[in-house]
Structures are given as structure tokens and as C-alpha cells.
Amino acid sequence: MAISLAVALRTLFCALGCVMLATLVYTICVDGLPFRKSLLTPWMTATLVDFYINIVALGVWVSYKESSWISAILWVALLVCFGSITTCGYIVLQFLKLSSQESSNDPMFYVLLGRRSKDGVDGKKFSVVTARVLFSALGVLMLGTLIYTLLTDGSPFRRELLTPWMTATLIDFYINVVALSVWVAYKESSWVSALVWIALLICFGSITTCAYIVLQLFQLSSQDPVYLILLNSSTRQKTGVTCERIGERNGETGLQ
Figure 1 (tube, rainbow, N blue to C red):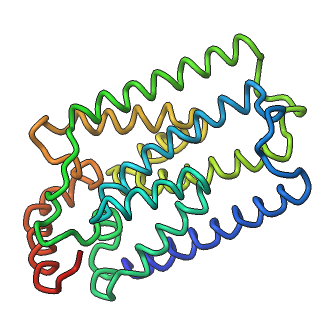
Figure 2: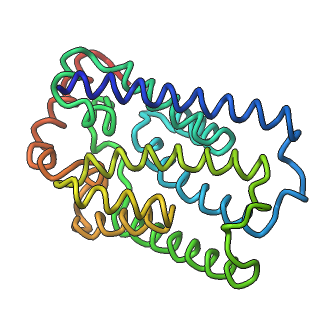
């Protein structure tokens, strides 16, 4: 079952990455490059703010997961430049790195947390309090952007807004939402709560992303390692033993 999940998710994100790459190439061919001031309509600007707040969430995960700041900075730069193409490529690479034992045991744990340095998973820390403040501020920023754009430019459900680059941006945005939804489904203990959160992600984008992350952070104490937010409750119960095992193995094999 776990191996099937790993194969299914790897296939899904490989397909989504190809869809986004094809969308990008097609849009450039039919509408030129996106670096034009005329494209920055109020709703395009709001969509980009929404998009990049989700990129912040994914970038924090990537920077925590990578064992060196050089590789972390490189991947985050690729996320900023290529969006969900990078998201999908990174996730597929993480699944390809799994051994058959890891794929059959708990693939989501190893993909989310990954192999750490010989100091173990706790070697690179983010402050829980800082993370709460960051994502609370980003959520408020997006809520303010949404309200302002609604008041100044009206409803987004207008056909004339769907320019080629707006369509490509929305596809890019929702592929990242798929990645976040997989994490939410893994985190939630029931399908009902998972589906509610995923529906909110689809409807409200990064406002929901930030709200969900902040709620999960408030379930941790300020002394807890922030990586625990990545794991579901059942995995957290065995995190100490599992993480210690990963640290020992990485130390023996020299993995960085």
C-alpha cells in the first residue's frame, strides 16, 4: 500500500510538472514573454501575491529539508522563477531517492523530512514563534490584498480577466495547491476534515495555507522543533526514535 502511494504520488507530480511545462511553453508562444507592465492588472497582481505566499510555505519546507544553505538557496530561487515546475521536480526527486524499504515503510515521512546530516533532523532549527508571526502576517497581507482588489476592481469571475498569462498563472498556482493538499490529507486524521481544508485551499488559496500552518504551529510549544509541523499525529508519537535512527544512519553512510 505504501509503495503504491509513493508510485502514485511520483507519477502524479511528474504528470503535473509536464502539464505546467507545456502550459508555459504554449503561453510564451501565443502571448510572448510575461515581463510586461500591461499584464499587471489588479487581479493578476493579487493572484501573484497569492501564488508567492504559497511559494514561501514551500520554500521554508525546501530550505529546512536541504542539508546545505547553497542547495536550499538554489532550490528556492528555482521555485521563485519556475513555480510549480520546480515544486513537482523537487517532489519527484525526493520520491526517487527513497529506498524500497523507505517506500514500503512510511514514504511521506522520508519525503517530508528527508535524510539529514549526521547531527540528525534537529541540526537546523526554525523558531516556532517566528514561524507563527511570519505566516500570520502573510495571511493578513493576502486577506487585505483580496479585500482591496474586490473593492477596487470588482469580482474576479469575469471572462475578460482570463488572459493567456492569467490562465497559466492559475494553473501554476493550483498545481502548488495540489502539493499542499497532499500534505494536508497526510496530516488530517479524517477524510472529512481533509476535504474541508482542501476545499478552503481551492477557494481561498494562501489565506487558507497560512491559517492552516498557524493552527498547526499553535499545537506545538515554543520549545518544540518546528519540523514536527510536517508530520501527522501518529508519526509524531514515534518521531524521536525514527529521527534518531535517520541521524545515526546518515552519520554512518556520510550522507549530507
